[in-house]
Length: 80
Length: 225
Image (cartoon, rainbow over all chains, first blue to last red; front, side, top):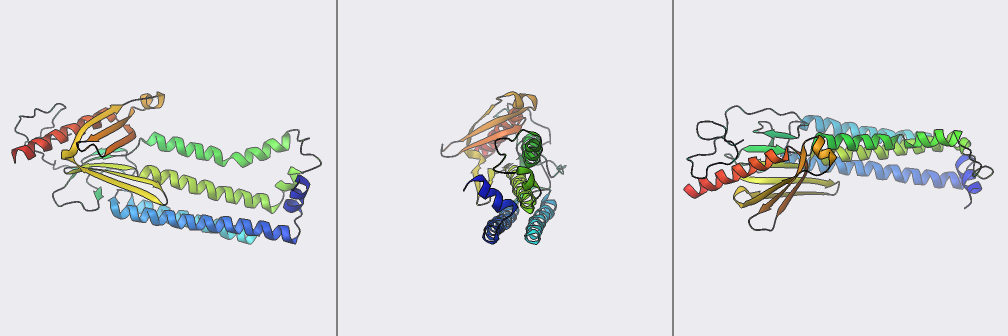
């Protein structure tokens, strides 16, 4: 693929190119949201093993993090 | 710092023949959530903590390590904006005729790329913070515990009885450690099987001293019983 073709795909994508890019983007964001869920799960497990003074703050932080990741995914879906 | 039966703080170099016992102080300290080093904390606990087991020392990497990593991530976050600015002002004759980068910046793909980048950086910052936050070492009246949060798929927890602690070494290497009074600790156990490595901990020399004092005290107490 030369740069001219890449430009066509990015700036004036045909139907197939647009679909291909959308699929890649959606895959990336689903992967990202799943990773975020796993991170939060891992932290929940660690919270059971050790109690730190900031436990409630950590819980709120993980929920905010998940919310932002899902929000970014929704914004991208709307843009697509 | 360990105390004797009258509540007097014991300095380094505990007399092994002294009639001392490990007494937990009445006034415990409430430590902050992001503390790197705390002795006798009241609001820290571990899973499987015995009724008569008390936490003597709580150790984490120095806060400056977290700050440096966060700053690196924030600088990396601005990378696409710098690329955009530079590419708009530089002589991009190499790309001219093949790829009009200015046009790309006006498409929705550029916006999607930025959102994806934000998601990636956010995930990285989250990971960096929790790697620091849950990389904990705890000394109790019975054991030494090392908790490592390595990645989202792995965490390691190791513990050894205080009686097993054989040797503790501290070292201060590099400019950063000298400026911020940090150091590395290496703890060897009697069995030789487990070695604990603590990096960039604040006041490493004091921690080494404290751990050795407690180890000697506990060995004395066990010897007397």
